[in-house]
Image (cartoon, rainbow, N blue to C red; front, side, top):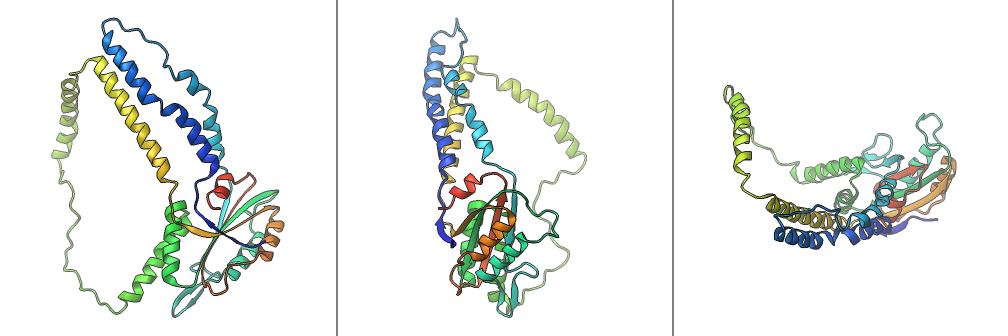
Amino acid sequence: MSWQSASYQWPACTQAIQEQSESVTKQIPTITTESTTRLEKVSGKVGFNRHSLSQESESLLVLREQLESLLCRGQVLSVHPYQFQVGSQAEAGHHLSPENAIEVLSNKLLDSNDKHKPNGDLYMVGWMLAKSSLADFVLASRALFNAVNIPELGMVVRRLEREQSLQTDKFTKPNCIVQPRFKPTANINQQPLRDALFWQGGQLAQLESLASDKQTPVTKLKLLAQKRGQQLAQWQQAINDLKHSNAELFKFEAEGSADVLATALKQSQPPDRANNFTFATLFISDQPLTFLSEVFA
């Protein structure tokens, strides 16, 4: 089995949850508008009944369990050029080939001296970035970090950007700042102004609360309904924004014990040998890694 080229895509497991949820939530603005319109007409004699979408929503409460099941416990093992005894350093910078990355990961899976070594039947998803130039590696690492936000990769992105800037700034001598230094602009709230803002702020908050009570309960309910509709639209847009990324990588999956996973890694076919900038990470868990498996395909 070889490392397969994969592109970012939105997992089917989360898309199914979203579609089922929105089968109800998309109806809320219309239903709420109709309800508030009827309420305005009979504001003198209002009867409160259960929401018309309440029963339909109750049947979809199981989606919470499905969503939470995607967040499983496990371990993340990453290798990159800046790790001690992993990457190699030369005058041109830090390097790590795909072959060396795979060898380090497989050897670590066989490390019996590590008390945190995973045991039992395991699921493993491996992601790898392999580039032949520092500039391409910076772009690919940043795109992947923006998509999946692996902490170790974030550190690599910062180191890469610093190393890239040093190549252009190493002949630049910055001017020394004159002492003392200006502090950043901030609110000047020394005593007793600080206490006055606190206590008198509380008094003014009561006045603002009383002054804002200019609306009838029906108007407040109408505004609340509008706010709910806007919030639902914002959540839907935020979810849809997560579905777009230009990140690409090499992907590897395997199941079995730690020894089996190590053997599968050693026997895997790495990307092109010309790539000497590599970041690789393994997600290992005793539970299926459904989301991580589907997010790149």
